[in-house]
Length: 323
Length: 288
Image (spheres, each protein chain N blue to C red):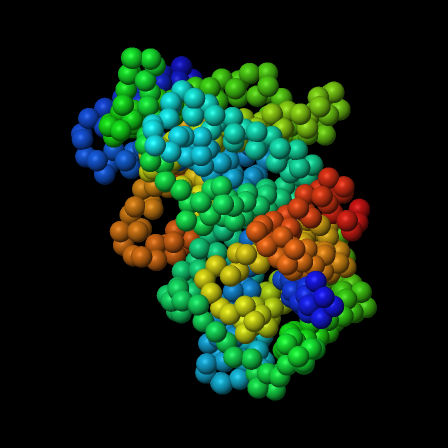
């Protein structure tokens, strides 16, 4: 039973990957960009899942690291030349990771509901730094004039100015993030995070310096959030302080919950569900957030566990009928 | 900074701090007693401001609008508690955050549908439209003093309610052990509904008072919400006196931050929070 289940899952994963890789060949610029947008949200949601799902830390300020990654992509690039992708990409990820490390030193001193409020407040602080600062272009934001170049010496493996190539690059980063985080969960480090999630007191009693592990998780999550932000800046070519707005933190948290807390594949599915809802609702009305808000309220009240919990609920429902 | 300017900023700081206290006290009460984190609390501030705008337009006087608006806000709070929030008491924080986030989206869109996305002004009531001259150039509007006075009266009322009335006793007992209070034959559900509606009415009242000063604009609730979170973190969750002192501290930090470091005016509040987190991460007035 379990082996069949695993085989079905592997098959579904490979099929989904093949579909994502084949899709940009359709050459519809709108849908290729939309797919890239979904995958960026998927990376962002997976990074938040490291905190919410693996470690049990509900962060409501994750947009801060997304924004820092995006701004780094612009600020680290030369103004009149394309930047070197292999320098600005790690640079942006490291910048977001450093920010997460520093903010983590503060916010991880709190727990539970304090943590939620303090992460939100720090994200707002970062918002003001970029909103009021002259270095960042203030409230207007900044443009990324050239997409980074992937050239290594004379060899150019792909060209990010071609939408198809960019989409594939984002897809590769999504798969890389997925594989890396899936390994991280199963590693001893991931087991310690799971221990902290279920009972931090006991982990401390066992001799683990839980603060350090939480800080490491917070830094990793921030760095990967920064990767998502970097890709966003490359895709859309501009950044504004609105990237730090708490709606972004709320939406990514919603994505994680839609897909199911603690499930990486769920976060990817959640990203598809979120963008699909956004596209459909905004097609209906300019006031689509009203519908979105209604959906959220209904999901919380009637579907605890998110969309990912639906199959289990149905199965349980059948089980109850048989019993 | 000369003395009159300093005095004006001082009064502004106190007035802003007291106004924040009205919002933060409801937030801290609702969390301390029912254990619900309410992101939508800032939306109630916005609801108050727009109620003031609409009712002032209809009645011609802000004071009448406030008298009508408070019972409306209280009723809205009771209705939302019955409809939504009472289902959240035994849920985890994640569900609470999510549902109240959904409520913000709904509130903002209803605001947009009903009033559009423009900034609206509300007139100061004629009774308080005067200004007190301080020097030849500077004067201080009476209405701002009225705001401070109204907030002080409410703060005292809140302390008396919590500390010295039978209802306050039930509220305090309910925050410690809900089931025990219920076992003693007290309808704790009704107490919760009252506390929630009270919190909503306080936030809405703050919004109504602020409407002529700050004007009425989209997203005004979110700004206040995040600052209120900072206050609750500094003051310690569930502590009304902590919320009062933290509100005044934040009022000062924000007002004088704007005067002294205008380039990074928004940051002062968060620096205070960061400092408190290093010093006492559970808030200054946290009780065990």
